[in-house]
Structures are given as structure tokens and as C-alpha cells.
Length: 207
Image 1 (cartoon, rainbow, N blue to C red):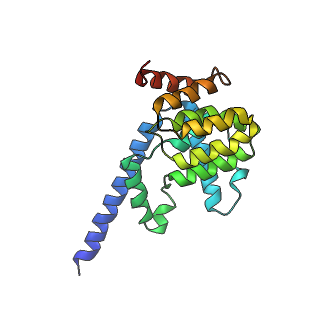
Image 2 (image 1 turned 120 degrees about the horizontal axis):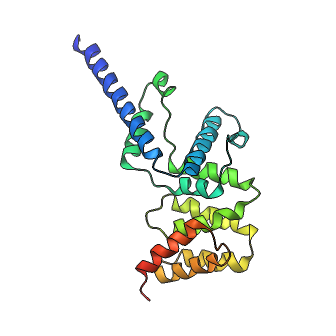
């Protein structure tokens, strides 16, 4: 029986060490992404905290402009194995420790929050080229949410653009997907996510 307090103490230190390591790794990875993506991530975190407290996430105020493209990139960013482990560990922490250690948002939460924000955004269509780029990338996460958001945001642009794009983006043929992206580039010729994905796909699709 005397060993139990010692085991609990050791276990507590192990958990704290894991959380500190997770925090350090998160901090390191965070500064490898563009500044606008960090702004978007902070904004979604604020929305998530407000949602957990029972207040409206739409009341969140950003300290800097939040680009729609950055929000979409955060939404489709796949979770790393370490993030999943950290989240699983967090779920089993005592309540008092959870108050001091933020839980990483999962894909579903990111999808819900981005959707809520964009539905009130005056420039929703800015999300379309980024969503299209993500949906043709097999490494993207949250694909179901991305496709649903593309469909919803598409109501703000002509059907002649959205309907062929939706059909093509769900095709598994890379050449078809590339044609969709190139057609969307005529509408958004300077969108960097779209241009970057087109160049990547052109290296894969043989002429």
C-alpha cells in the first residue's frame, strides 16, 4: 500500500513531462508555418474555448485579420501521431490539470468552427480555391468537411463554376482533378494555394 502514493507521484511527473514535451514540440512546429496560419489557429482556439464555456463562438474577436485561406489550411491540416497521443493523454488527465493544459482541437472541431465563421463572412468564396487544392491532395485531413464546405460556399459563385468542379474534385483521376484546378485558376489567377497545387499535379500528370 505504501508504494501507491509513490507510483501516483511518478505517474504524475510522467504526465507533466509528456505535456511539457508536447508543448515544446507544438511551439517548435508552430513557427514553421506562415504567420497568417498561426493567427488563424489562435482564432480557432479562442472560438473553441468560448464554445466549451457555453458562449457563442461567433463572438470571438481576432486581434489581427484572419485570412479565409489560412482558416481552411488549418481545417484540412492532418493531425500528427504525436498530437493524437497528446489529445488521448489529455482526455485522461485530472480536471485541475486540464485547466492549465489546452486540449488540441480535433479535425471535427476545426471543421465545425471554420464553417461557423465562414457562414457569416462576407468573402466566403475566397475559401473555394484553397478547398479545391486541399481536396486534390491525398495528404489533406478533414476531407468530408472540406467537400461539404466547398458545396456550401459554392452558392456564392455561378453554378457553371461550382457544379463541374464538385464533380471533378470527387473523381479519382489526377488528370481530371488537374483540369478542375486549372479551370478554377481562371477565376482566381493569383491564389497561391491553388497555383502551388497545380504545379505539384503537373509534375505527376504526364502530358
